[in-house]
Image 1: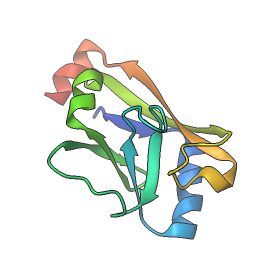
Image 2: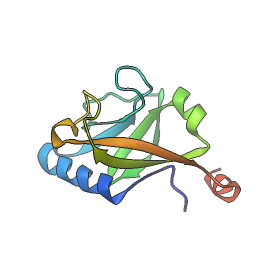
Image 3: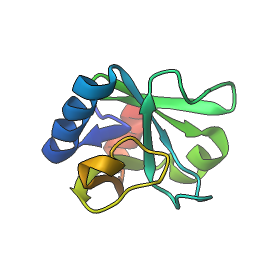
Length: 117
């Protein structure tokens, strides 16, 4: 089964580290305001999601959301969440770890798109 969002081993390790410190987490793909288009990591429930957000799936047992408007642009791609050295978004939990989450993407194949419908 194809997934709309996945994570690298590095991202999953960082998620586990953050869960140990902060408890359950959630992600919301930033739309490009203060923090560019970074995946933002919050304690679960701290960022309010609603009818204008889409749940893409889970990475590391952590829900991953995106706004409906942004999803319309990205729905043909799989998001691959990675963790790299550097400072992340100022509102995201990973900043003090010296790492940041990064969104990579790839276009779904025709077969994958058919599975998603």
